[in-house]
Length: 104
Ligand SMILES: [Zn+2]
Image (cartoon, helix red, strand yellow):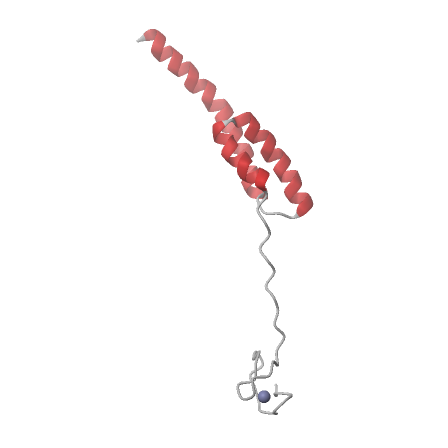
């Protein structure tokens, strides 16, 4: 590649001429990172605090991520699994807790 202004040879990857400072390469903007889906974030947090709410939010978040192309699809999936786990574990813990209280 040559500088179109002053004619000196330049590297193929050069963006500016080292001698005259003219712009010679194409400056490509990096694509902005896609925003996180808020429902996925809240759904994941909700999976621990309020599993049913978390589950609903995560299911909704997955649909929204697919439609809008936002980040958080995998987080929402993890939230769904986590909320199902907590929905199973919490009643067991409550039963164990009551049993402990009654029989001790
Ligand atoms: Zn130049």
